Length: 114
Length: 113
Image (cartoon, rainbow over all chains, first blue to last red):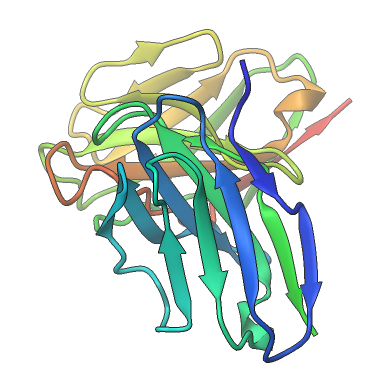
């Protein structure tokens, strides 16, 4: 079956611009997660959705970052006024269980801020 | 979050067993030990998890020390496709601690042909 998909696979933008990164989870998965991975580091948790609501957004670095999941399926990570330090691979994962289940990751979106 | 310690890198030869160690001396009694791996240019993928007993699945085996302060991921016959970064992660089993994964830097496994 189809796995988690993320679009675009690569995004190059200029400092100060706004970007949106999309995640399509596995159909039926109620839990959705966003992580960010900098070069040479492990992924770092950003936000967790259970259904439509953000159950934990404690990993979002600042108020320039925002994520939505309006219908409990597709999610969009939004970054305003991008900075060079935002350059990283943004990973999305989904899980069929409420909590604690195996997470299925997408291939990520590589964001480069020039 | 309880911390894990892994070697930065390990090397193996194809078709030989690989033992990837992980230390987690501050593990709590309810923490599960999870292993994920990340192949080049891909997202992480689940490998195996356990609580106290050793576990086997089609990908690997997980050996957990009796005091649970360490564990070892065992790949019985390494292939070139097993070359990846392997992450050992502790995960609680109740609300607030069991949904997000806290990754360290992991172990980069190189498999030589």
